[in-house]
Image (cartoon, one colour):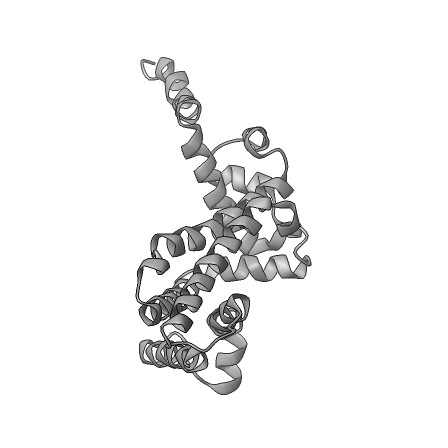
Length: 221
């Protein structure tokens, strides 16, 4: 009998926590939304399932994000933001050009390898013909930043006689990302068809070094 009066206080605690920590609530919703969109795709994802995982309501999610589609857009912004923010912190323009490129290649390879959810979400968005990326000005802005830093590094390298003239930053960016992305996005089919284990550490080290060498040879004067 003494325990029943305490029940309202317990059930109220999550509500108070959510009210007092709106940023934490948003982050929790985004993290669970990533899981749902990765597993179910945009069409199959259910806001109810996300709400159930974090013990909240659909109403709370709609309060923060407005709609399932806007939640998906913000998932895209978060995942792109994670990789671009880390690239910015690398401060490529302060490094010797060859070292800057090598670090960028190694980081990109490792990030894709360790963040399968990013690769899957980008693959899902390509199925939708980038419809939701088009709705986000911030994704375009954050991706232009890495091209500017890469372009500045390539120009410095050319001025020092290390890289050849006329390199297009977008082409180099595509070269680095295409291999890193493909080996994750197609890992199951590729591994089965060619009977190779892409998650093997020795294989990863070989591929990482191969990508570094390929990019550096393409850039060299």
